Image 1 (tube, rainbow, N blue to C red):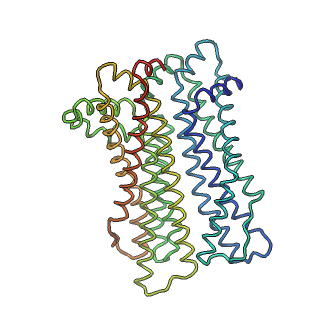
Image 2 (image 1 turned 60 degrees about the vertical axis):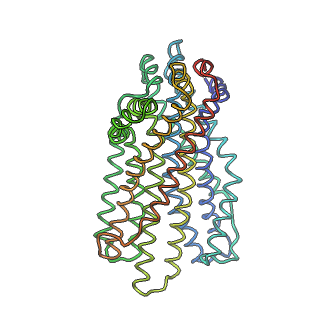
Image 3 (image 1 turned 180 degrees about the vertical axis):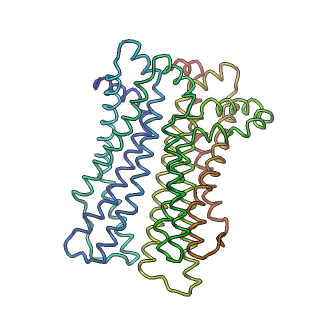
Length: 452
């Protein structure tokens, strides 16, 4: 089965590209931030510098770890589901569940090891850039030398490998439990129901976000900048919760404009409506990064704006700790923007390219390339609106409690400019990526696309 796994990787390289890039970027991020721990343990590092470096590695690296785990699990699940027909064929010719599981785990192990090896140099360069940022903002002494040693290498390996293999086990468990007929149906239209574990997980993250929001508004009220310790996490948990509930959101919320699209959208509108109804799980993969991008980015940026405005209203001069927190927030935003953007692009490309056969059948049935483009544009618009909507709701888990804890008022005195900028970037990424991938797919003749 390992030999089969290697041949499958070579034959289906595009299908595994999203998972590989998620692992690669995740390992790079983890090693870059973990190198701050190596640096903190170097000779001649003062206690103040050590505290700053450890805080940067722990806080930002911890949030990054959660996002990496979620991204790898999402992309790997998508890759395995796209091979449902292949797995069903293997079962029909006698492959046992254990053999299928070993194949999936073998593929994932190879990807994780390759991603880790290729991430070492970018992780080293990223760590140096992070230390330079801290030194340029006078948070770490200029004489501190960057170290990239055993902590960064070990954390990069174990986090990447453990996250990847854990995601593979979960994905393989579902794949091997399905009967051949179920696998073929899953390959054709995707799962009909959202699993109970996914729903429970999504609700659990939302309850955790609610708990932290209450703590921020009550226990942390009057604590000043310290309220960020609980408020900053809240939008992350809420965004992950809504992302896990993605298939439900696609079916229930994204399906609301179905009637107008079918009536006024012509052929493209009809095709878009059918895909939204039948491919909720596949479309939910693209919805998740939009929610993460919008929710975490909006929540963290507005939290920083509220804190800066409160400091100015108090007539105080920002101290070193406050500058450190501001830098942390900006680094988090940069990390999230990059990671969510790449995750969104990877997911949309993988999902769209996999629909080559579907596009071919539509064209053979009479759909024009323009109608296919229109269908993808409408789907992207619906997903973007849905993702932005729930991303905004997730950000309010941070914004409203923190504003109350910091200023004593319910509604923050901030403008919509930041949110509109985030929405514009999310919409541009979703639309441009989807249409570009569609154009690449449509270059394949319809008859050849159906045969692939």
